[in-house]
Image 1 (cartoon, rainbow, N blue to C red):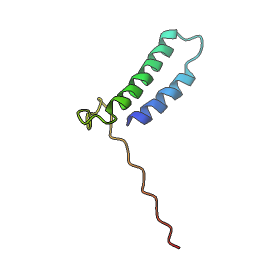
Image 2: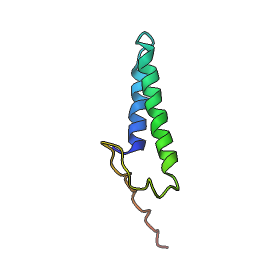
Image 3: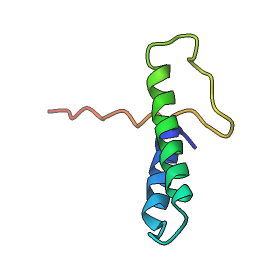
Image 4: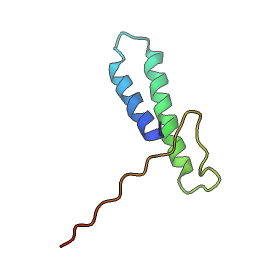
Length: 71
C-alpha cells in the first residue's frame, strides 16, 4: 500500500468512528494521517530519503501513460 492509499483508508476509517467512541481514536487516526502527509513532504526533493519506504509501504503506482490520439 502506498502512502496515498493509506491516507485514503485512514480518512475512510475516521468517518466510521462514532462520536461516542473514545476521542483518542479520532486523535490517533488524525495523527497518523498528518504523519503520512509530513513524510510525503519530507521526501519531496530530498535524495537522501528517495527510495526509503516505511514498513509495509509499497512504491507509488505509476499511472498509465495517456495514449496519443492520432488524427
